[in-house]
Image (spheres, rainbow, N blue to C red):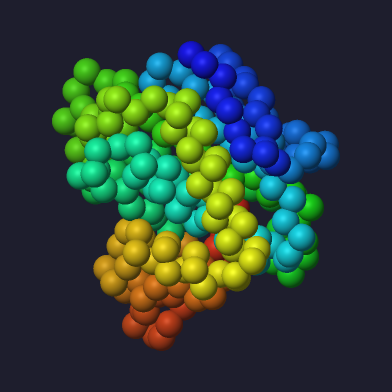
Length: 235
């Protein structure tokens, strides 16, 4: 398997075995590694990677990097997969391919105060390439990339493409603000307008606010769930 090639401003570090690139990237970010590092672990049945960022904005704004990486992934797979393959994004980071759940994105940061700069932020990608089960029909809502007509998609090429497309969207977000990202993400979002339960609140998902916070209409009004609620603990 060839080593991936990343665009300028990004560098790669391969890990292997049971090492989780997300946990490794968070540890390296906490120790002060450079932004743009992509830690990756590509196996026969799984693509795992994590991207280190150093946002110079408050955490509540920096959380836009989660949907940015989601849009980057959709653009990347869209460029490599057959045209009939549909990719959608769940609000909390899940990825849907042809309607079924297929891995997802996760996020951690160097702080939890929404109004403070976090110092670092890591977005991880975990994508099953093949289902490790003899009876995939037992989990009809779960799928893997190769089961959805993407057996010819090379995972290293997909990793490289994810990095390139995500960098494009980061650059655009820095230059033009969140509006273009909002427009692109909303067209890919899974479940807007449907009933949903998130953070203990059940109701109709209306959409998101300017910081990608989830808006849910419940019986007693409209509730806002900030995107910071999906941050994973690194302690």
